[in-house]
Amino acid sequence: MAQKSELENTGIKSEKLIETSAAWDGSALPDYPQATPVISIYKYTFPPHTVTNPHYHKIINCGVVLSGTLTIVCQDGSFHDFHAGESIVETIGTVHHGENRGDIDVEVIMFYAGDGTTPLSFPIENKSNK
Image 1 (cartoon, rainbow, N blue to C red):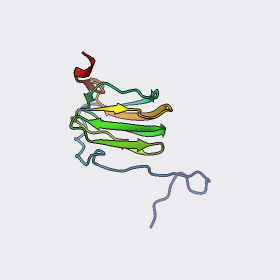
Image 2: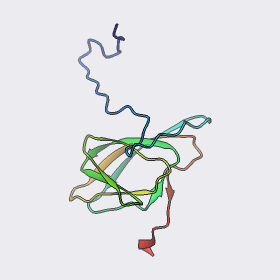
Image 3: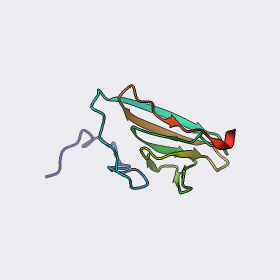
Image 4: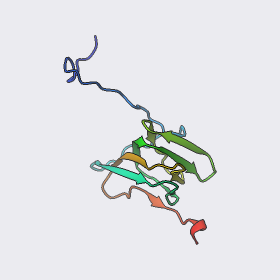
């Protein structure tokens, strides 16, 4: 028997974008912290031809690309393009950066499941900016 939903007979549509226990590269997500959870939601806007500094995450984070194409590039040179409407589940502990290689803004909403004390990301020295 199907479970009833709060949306039943309302005309409201729901679409699961992603459900996973792995990051986009296939690596397993870590356990949640044992502390009180703190959820943070950020909207990022990447102007055309911009690049974040190299960084990594220690907390689970995921999001949805609203517009444009976001390219995530790992330190080993591997990369993945995420297009408007696609979900991202970030890697944990893997050094990477994000790029907008296109000619329009990339907008992304990201959700972070942290503990209130662990930073959302940890920057790595960018040798190309010396």
